[in-house]
Image (cartoon, rainbow, N blue to C red; front, top):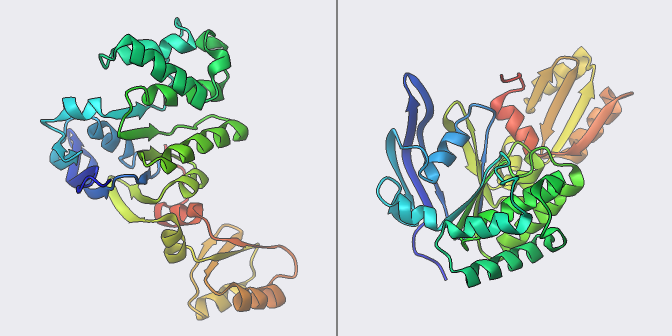
Length: 306
């Protein structure tokens, strides 16, 4: 049943550190049951927004409501209803897997009986029951990340904030985490995700925003953004000659000219692809679908960020 209000509503949100503006008049909404992504290069302002979202960092300007409560005055209630899975491993190495959950449940003044039941349910859900008595130091990276997710759910939150939840995991572990997040999504939980993995955002998010330098560049569903900013089909040409570059420019086709590489974005892969293949690609051309990573790089640039 709907709440009648967005789970998160930010209006002209601002965050400044002295003369530096980390978040610059950002507005967005997250609806109930939505899996919402915050994407951007390092320094885009994502972490600042996340920290304001759960009351860790005060707003410099604008407003933010979570569960229709003002974050500035209602943060105690808000914190009791959210779960946060941080990027850093903050599990207690001196406790067992089971006790990491039981101790955390105590922070919410949960009864012992309920804490034991929640712990058992979450260990089952995240396939960690066989490690119940193990020390955290004995867990693989994927298991530790699943335990972090389990801990963020101990209080039965209505909103879960996931800050780069699969960073550093191998592909198998990453896909295991994705499966669990999809399951949570299917149950109607509202989730907010920050990630540097574009495939992750495209697979999980209903809707997302891409930020840079404290501002929102675009927002929409992954498919909408791919269609609008990358096209449904991509042609990559290595060491392009002047003839194909002239052809693409004359036809006013969306493209990027990189060092020793030409990237062509198109919604008409059959006719354009055939022309490029027959006239300009005697050797090395790559034909592929457009991706969210193409959108991200077109909007935020390809230079290294320090």
